[in-house]
Length: 134
Image 1: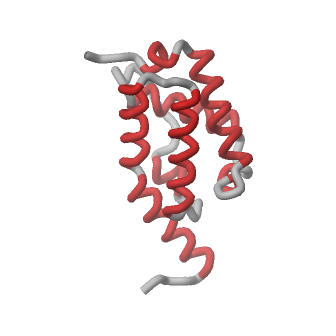
Image 2 (image 1 turned 120 degrees about the horizontal axis):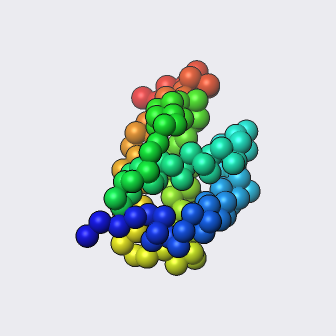
C-alpha cells in the first residue's frame, strides 16, 4: 500500500512543526550544532521537507534543491556527527509519534546516505587540516 508522507504525519503544519523541532535540536546540539549554525534554518527546513516528500511514501513531492554532494561538500562530517544527527532524528520521530512504517522508511533513507556523507566529510576534513589517514 502506498502512503503519503504529509498525510501520515498529520498535515503540512504538523510536518513543519516537527521539522522545526528537529532543526532546533540540531542547531542547539553540542556535538553537531556547529555544522548547522552557519546555515539558514528556515531554508534547511524547507529543503528537508521537499526532499522527504519526494523520497518517502508515494513520493508525490518534488525536490529541486541541491544534491547530497552539493549540500555536504564543504562540511567535515564524520561518523560520530552523522550518528548523532541520526539519533536526534530517531528521537524526534518517536516523540512526535510518527507511525512505525513511516519512521522505519525515514530512518532507512537517512542511514542509506551515511557512507557517502561520512566519506565526503573525511575528505573535507583532510582538505581543511592537510591531514591524510593511512
